[in-house]
Amino acid sequence: MTDLALIPAPRTVEHPADGPRHLTLDARTTIDAGPGTGSTARWLRTVLGAATGLPLTDGAGPGSVRLRISPDVARADGPEGYRLTTGGPEAAVVIEGGGPAGVFWGAQTLRQLLGPEAYRGAPVGGGARELPCVTVEDRPRFGWRGLMLDVSRHFTPKDGVLRYLDLLAAHKLNVFHFHLTDDQGWRIEIKRHPRLTEVGSWRARSKWGHRASPLWDDTPHGGFYTQDDIREIVAYAAERHITVVPEIDIPGHSQAAIAAYPELGNTDVVDTASLTVWDTWGVNPNVLAPTEAVLRFYEGVFEEVLDLFPAATSPFVHVGGDECPKDQWKASPAAQDRIRELGLADENELQSWFIRHFDRWLTARGRRLIGWDEILEGGLAEGAAVSSWRGYGGGIAAANAGHDVVMCPEQHVYLDYRQAPGDEEPVPIAYVRTLEDVYRFEPVPPGLSPEAAAHILGTQANVWTEVMENRSRVDYQVFPRLAAFAEVAWSALPAPEARDYPAFEGRMTTHYRRLDALGVDYRPPAGPYARQQRPGIIGRPREGTPPNV
Ligand code: ACM
Image 1 (spheres, rainbow, N blue to C red):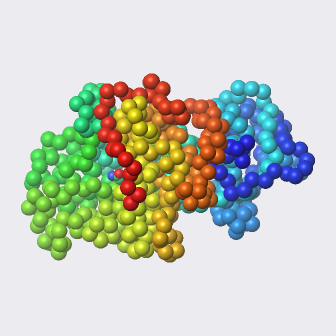
Image 2 (cartoon, helix red, strand yellow):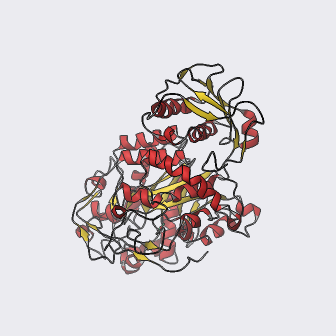
Image 3 (tube, rainbow, N blue to C red):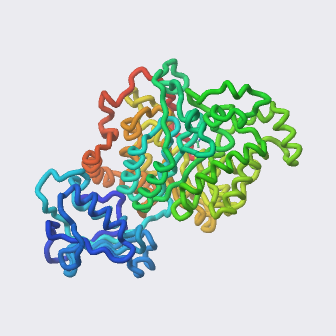
C-alpha cells in the first residue's frame, strides 16, 4: 500500500489482475451526482477543480465520477463506509457510500490517489491527471474521530477555523470540539450578554511561555466569532460531514465571563469587579457562584448556543466541568448557605448540582451533555457523556456505569505535549509524545466488558494553546501527529505493539508532500527549523514515560 500512501489506511485495496493500470481524468471528465451526494459533488468541483483546472461539469457516462448512496454499502459498512472503484467500464470513478458522509470520505480517498498536487489551490502542471486503477473498500473503526481546538487561550480567527475543518476532513476526522470559553477569553457573541465579548474577549497582555516564565507579551490579544461567523463555521463543517461540539465552560474556567459580569462570581469572598480577563495560565480560583441568577444567565447563553449549533449537526453540547477549585465555595457564606438549602453534602456535590442542572436543561431540549471526566465526581449526571482526559480511568468508570465516553487521555493525545526530547522543541510542555507514540495509542483500554466497550464512542486529540501564539505554532504541535491519530481513529489497526510503524512512516513520506501543498507548518521529521524554535522561552517538560493510566 506504500505506493498509494493512503492515510488513514483503508480496510482493503485491490489492484485489477489485468487491464490498464492507470486512467486519466481530463477536460471531458464529468461529475454524475446521485441523490444525497450534492455536498460531495460541490466539494469535488471546488477543491479538485481548483487543483487541476478541470471543469468537472455535470454529466453521466464512461468518463464520469459517479457518486451514489448504496444500501449495500450501508448494510456492510455503515453510513460512513464507502467503496471506491477507478477504471471500471461504466464510469471513470465510482464512489458508493453507505450515506452522504461515506461518499465524502470516498472523495477524500480519491484526492489522495491523485497525488500531492491535488492539495494545491491552483494547477501547477498540465490539466489531465493520472489515477491508479484500484478498488478501495473502507469504513471507520470509530464514529467519533475528533480534534479539540482551544481558541480561548490564543484566538484562531474564523478563516483559520475553516482551514482546520478542511484539515480534519482531509484526515477523515468528523468531530470538531470547539473550546470557545475559558479564563483567558470568551470567543462567541451572545446577543443578550454583549459584555461577554465586548469585555471578555480581550486581554491586555499574555504570559509568554509557561506560567513560570518571567516574560510577558504586551501586545493586547483577543477576538471573537460573531453569530454569523459561527453559523458559517457550522455550515462549513456540515458540508464536510463534521459535527461541531461547542464548549461553554461551567462552573470553572470562567474568569473571562466574571470579568465581563462580576455578579457571576463569588462576590462575598472576592472583589470580582476588579477582575480582568486572565493574562496567565494555570488553574484559576475564580469560579461561578452557585446562584439561581447564574443559572438563568447561562441558560440564556445556552439558548443562543443551541440556536447557533442546530441539533442535527451538534447533538452534543460540552459544558466543561474540569478543574473547578472549591476554595471560594468553601470560604463563601452564600455558597455554604446554598449547599444547606439544596441539601447537598459538600462542594463536590455543588459542582454536580451545576452539571445536573444543565444536563436536565439540555436533555429537555433534545441535546446531550458532555463534560470532562471531573463531572463524575460527586455523582455523574444522567445521560451525560464523558471526555476522559486525566487518563483512561474516568472513561472506564463512566463506561462501566453505562455512560458514553470519548477517550482523550492527556498521557497520549494532548498535542500541546512536546514531540521530542532535547532543547529544540518550542516551549516544551509535559511528556514526550512522538509521532510513533501517537500511532501506538489505543483508545479502548484492555479488560473492558463488551457492553462497556460499546460505550466508547471514539477518540479525540486535544490542542490547548497557551504556548501556541499563532497558526504556525498550532500547526507545529498538531502535525504530523494528527495523521497518526487519524489512522488510530479510523483504521482497523492491530494491538499497539503489533502496529507497523515503519510502514506508516513510509506512507508519511508522501503525506508530508500533501501537507506541504496545503501549507501546513508541521514539525519536520528531523526536528524543528530554527524559526520554529523558541529559545529562552520557558516551558514545563516532564521527564520519563507517562503512566498508562
Ligand atoms: C483539561 O485538560 N483540563 C480538560
